[in-house]
Image 1: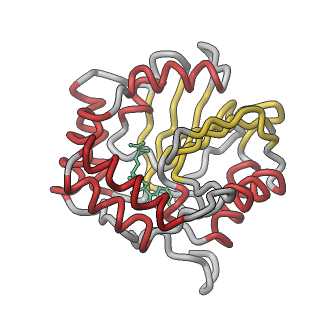
Image 2: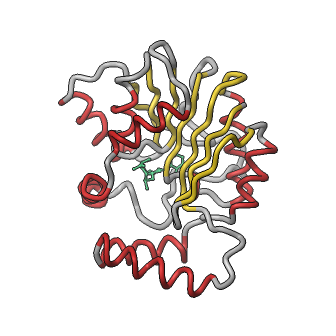
Length: 231
Ligand SMILES: C[S@@+](CC[C@H](N)C(=O)[O-])C[C@H]1O[C@@H](n2cnc3c(N)ncnc32)[C@H](O)[C@@H]1O
């Protein structure tokens, strides 16, 4: 770390993605609940990637989105702070014989950085691991690695400020997740709200703006918000 006060992003908060069982279960649960191939196709369109584009994914997890995106562009740098996540993702890439994804150890604030500006940056369900001050630093750092006119796709748990009653909102949300994803996923959501650093939409949007990332589109589905931004 460059400075003694630098936030240590290798320490996981909430779910510990350095635990092999957590990682395997995470991948299995995501395969059950998400259609990542479709997500990646939508993201590719939103960030306007071309066959010769270079993309940096931050917080790649088990690498599914990076592997899907790699079919639509020249190169994907896929970074994560968890060695275990990266090992899992690299195994998948080998099994599928994907050669244009480089899995690298690093996060929003430290470790791997692309050595030139990239055409697009993607991050899903990872920025909430940082407290707000460090989110702001993270967005400013990463935006510097995005070429002018390049797109930034950010999807995460973001709390809508206009919610009249957050207790009722969280209760309804957790009940819905319990029904759709089971008790374990509902318990993880409780832990997310309690101990992870998801923030309010106006705070995050202010940070994007200050990082020079103009919001072109915002989609909120009741829990997750996706922002498509342009530098
Ligand atoms: C909930 S998983 C999301 C994985 C994947 N993006 C997805 O959509 O399934 C969160 C991931 O963010 C990683 N992570 C946590 N803190 C991070 C940081 N500061 N920078 C980059 N990745 C981080 C975790 O190791 C984990 O792999």
